Length: 456
Length: 131
Image (cartoon, rainbow over all chains, first blue to last red; front, side, top):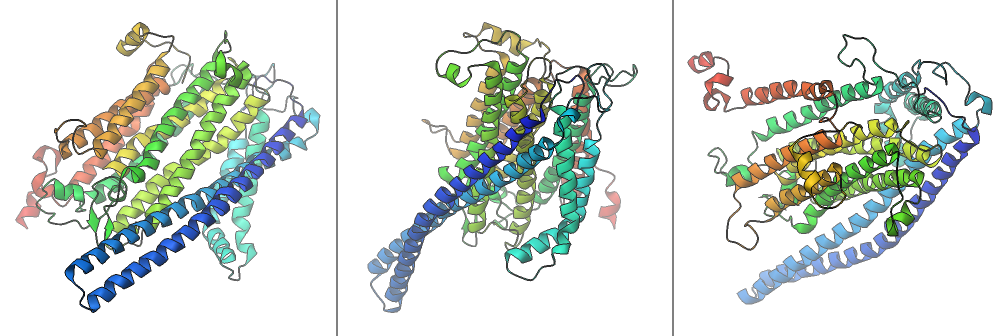
């Protein structure tokens, strides 16, 4: 979006390409160290633990078959159970490092292609197109709106239209089955539109210095006198509330019929025994057990979800600090270590945004590590009975939330880029404000998801 | 998230607190403390250092109560609904109507709805029991 504009050289976009290169390097480094180096060491330990368990199991079965004394059998059973726990711990430890390495790699590659491609497309424009009045505003012109969101939406529509064959073809390619590359066409065209829409959107916004923000002027309208972008964002949040409400209502509706450990503990007369395991049975202490699954939760299993909860709250605060700093007219550099981290107002805004970005990225990594553990422990949509339903709604709801976090992180990449180049101040800080509203909403949704799916 | 000043009990309390911290900082601190409380309620079977049992009903009450406090803290202060024009609060609350309708639907479609829900929130179920 643009209104009043500053002169911005197109060469500045090359810095976005540089950002992309840095992300590729970080992703490769993280994958090499965590996903390959540490994970391979952990895999060796896992294999050793597996062999120990197999041996302990063999000794136990052998003792039973050979009519060993009860004391010997009991001792071997204890050894077998310990070996089994050790094997599970070793497996989860391996999964933690492997999943974290792969997740960071994929996230960094997505960040790199998003910011790098958008930057590259804008950097190749002739410079005089960058700051002239191009129909969507200018120093002395009222804001005329932007077509970029429409191009972006068209791209999303095309991507989703082609998505079934897109994911099937990618799946075939990854598993070495013959695949028709033409089946990727519609989605790839969609991604092209998305990239063009986003790049053009950034191009329009980067020089924006805060003048001529569109105001709702119709006197009898609900939002009369308010910034149109802010009103639009609140309407968008309203629709998002509905999306998450559907997940919760589905979950609650199904849960009223499940005999979970909670229902059994509560003395529900229709629930004599547990027939469904929920995610919380795998994560919290004293969770329910069914067919040998669940009930192994402790401090460590609950930790990723708890850390993520704190991470989102802290990130909500850092985005508030970024906005507060940007809008501050009499900002004074702090002293001590913070002074070194935030020597100027421009650096402070950028670094608060980077802190938010890092916390959000950590959220995604921990989320996928947690998912990998849950899947390894048998909490899958293919699980027997209604546990499969519980897994399905858990992965859909927490996955949709994670997707919102990830989309927020992609938007934040641009905010960091703008903070690092043009900078934010008291006049153009509304970009951070509007993004902050979205980010707080994501935090708000987690406030409900965490207790409902992880603790209850 | 906005520039408007807000006023209320929480703001007045914040002004009296020591240090040069603003309402956002104290809101952040409260959110963190309540999250610890929330996780602790599930993690411990008794109140630490005592024999007082944390029952299922208490955990329920804590999860819902903490959720409401945290939701209010984020929406009112971080999203700045408290200082912004009322139209934003109305916009944010509009979907609650549909959420309530969905909750009502959950109740009605529950197997126990015919016999267990109070009569004021159900249609006339007589036909179902007379069939």
